[in-house]
Length: 262
Image (tube, rainbow, N blue to C red; front, side, top):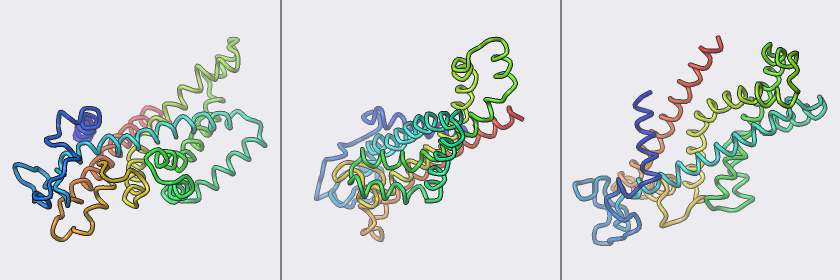
């Protein structure tokens, strides 16, 4: 748990203040220094253009983790709005919204994201939109379930008996509980969103060269993996450790929340 927190804190520093950690300009090329193995001068080696892989991994955190965080935030907000409204809506409206959500849940998230990017076109903004649309059905379903559950809770009924209006009771007693459950899910979802964004970038649908991005770097080194493994391995490790750390923290928070509720 604490290793995960420490690693995500390191990723946050790399994303917000990359100059503190980077040792080279991530865009500076040096043909004479191409494909150098890891060493004192270049901690993670250099790529085909002589660019420092370590510095590119550091600067790539802003795009890779940023896209995943943005997509998760947008999915949480959209899921909270749609799910909460569906939970208090008349039965026919709720039924239609849930059937549409079930249709989206029937497809893998990455497939939905891939289809959305294919329609909208490549680019980091479109990747964030695609990952958001792919992730939002899960948040809608949870928000709707929690809303319907909390509406009938004893403390909400007590507030109504004491004269609290339905809108105020919903805002003060239902919405915070729904948001708390979604926040725990979002912590786990950050890792999935980062992984989906990196997968789209690996396919060439995200940021383009020479911008540093973990999925794009992973793709760029696949053709020379046999003689320059470091080009793909280090951004791949960054993706893996970030996803694992986010998942560990999310699962820990969910276990503690379940313990509190029980």
